[in-house]
Length: 323
Image 1: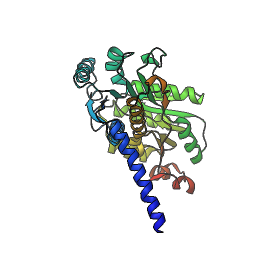
Image 2: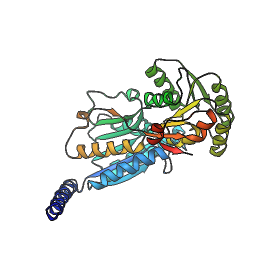
Image 3: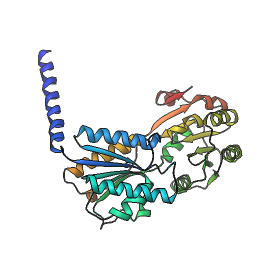
Image 4: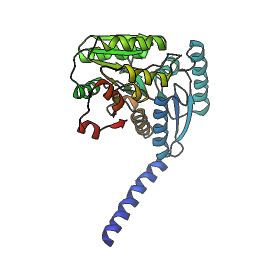
């Protein structure tokens, strides 16, 4: 027993020495995290929190700049905050810049830093970066983890509850959900019946219409519906659901029977680990683009009862359950 304790102490000491050595190696290195959105936006909060934790553990000095482009969507605001971020970069002189989601790519990276010397590591760009001309063999200062929707994994879970073939998609009438729907249709090789809502009344009508048209309903983001009422939406769904519904957004767990949620923390961990590699001398261009792979399974049994579906014991054992 005494030998085992000594062995554990030795292992812990060695591990601690490795962490301390890395922290010493990166002491004085600076990383700027540019968040496209605002504090309180759940997805980018997860990206930011996990990225900063990883960098702090490695001894990297950090700063955060939030662009607030979700609440303030005008081109004028994007131009203004992009110049503010550029000024911060020039003043603080970070060794690496971590950027989250699409607005920062449009406003900062592409016009000011694409192909320059300052390394950028990106997360949260939806599906691909071709809109920004990336990846490009001539661009050496950029790599990314792309945000993709786990539609195959979600459909597999939905089929376990009740087999089906036809698919509907309900979301706000904004660019990102439309892009999600188009990619899902291509991935699955089927036509998706879509309803895109400009306001809450249209969202509720779309929900009702799709109940009688398809076997499965995928619930996309409601971001952009200014008169959205969360409590009323949950009550409405629980009263009117007739088919199996699913989502990949954790903030929609109350509106879907089953969720396979993307994790912002996966993106944050990846950019932190990648930034650390870059700070140690690895070229961003030598690190291949990747995409999110993890997910949290959630089952809403209140909606399941309304639809007349009984999740299996195995499904409930592997899921977070909303009762």
